[in-house]
Amino acid sequence: SKIMLSGIKPSGDLNIGGYSGALSQFVALQHDYDCYFFIPDLHAITVYQDPKELHQRSRDVAALYVAAGVDPNKAVIFLQSQVRQHAELSWLLETQAHFGELSRMTQFKDKSGGKDTVSSGLFTYPVLMAADILLYQATHVPVGDDQKQHLELTRDLAARFNHKYAPTFTLPEPVIQESGARIMGLDDPSNKMSKSNPNQGSYVSLLDEPSVIRKKFSRAVTDSDMSVRYDWEAKPAVSNLIEIYSVFSGDSIDAIEKRYEGQGYGTFKKELAEAVVSKLEPIQKTYHEIVHSEELDRILKNGAERAAEKAEQTLLAAKRAMGFVTF
Ligand code: ATP
Ligand code: MG
Image 1 (cartoon, rainbow, N blue to C red):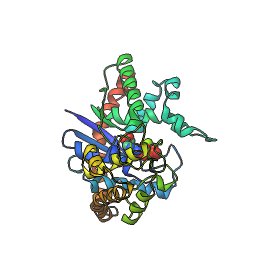
Image 2: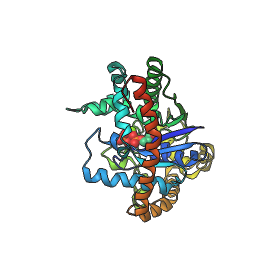
Image 3: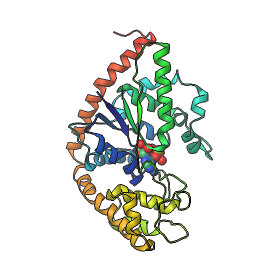
Image 4: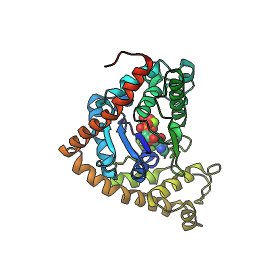
């Protein structure tokens, strides 16, 4: 069977970048795969998280999965920290990962750059990600642009382990998205839209009020000439807005270009904001209904149980392959 795993960290505000590159994909792909959609809270703490905020955001992400349309009766939705096998397999794999290859991870370089101190967890983060994927024998992993290198590492570690010890792990294939895999910041089209960006104007949170969403799009940077044209070289800012428009309206890039031909940015930006608002309104409504509910607790408990069952099988196989005494 085809098995898919993916997750969105409970750090910062889940925004339209994560929606485009991850959450909307979860919803679209859940019927084609056995899906594990988790909340990587152990990954979030590679940089400091205020405990209260981590707690709330973990529930937020879970509630947003469900509100956006992930079906908890089909997909396994769980918190990473509630399935202990992740941390345990991660240690086994850390002993297989090379210092040099981890040093080459561009996300580590990006996230550690300019900091006085960097946690070693930020450095070994890609190994934990490999453990996440390999525990479930995932065959497919949807990857936004920023995760391609980490998935390559996962495959390398799996192949290395299988070769050195015994065939244990499935090598996962990337599922590359055709559009919307890399949404850029509204303030700067040369930077990926990121929820850890302290400038809240750089992204639209899935939980932003309609008035805030409208304001953020009206302030989004554009390019010098006034045409609505999709051309990443010459017009990165507008191309990014067209891309967002396409993801949220379902209209093709071509159709959007044609609709605004010969017009300036004004109407385009207004209607873009409306497309995003009308997609997010029902999601926000359901989110508010379930985020503090016991139903959400049940979904997460049940998800953790289902996940642990599968994860334990793989962990045991890995431990046996390495020679640990198991019973
Ligand atoms: P952080 O800056 O803390 O890493 P993030 O916004 O990158 O946060 P993640 O939780 O790291 O969010 O990513 C979750 C998923 O969303 C990943 O699959 C990632 O590829 C995807 N994703 C994140 N940002 C974008 C973006 N700007 N465009 C498309 N996909 C994105
Ligand atoms: Mg990220």
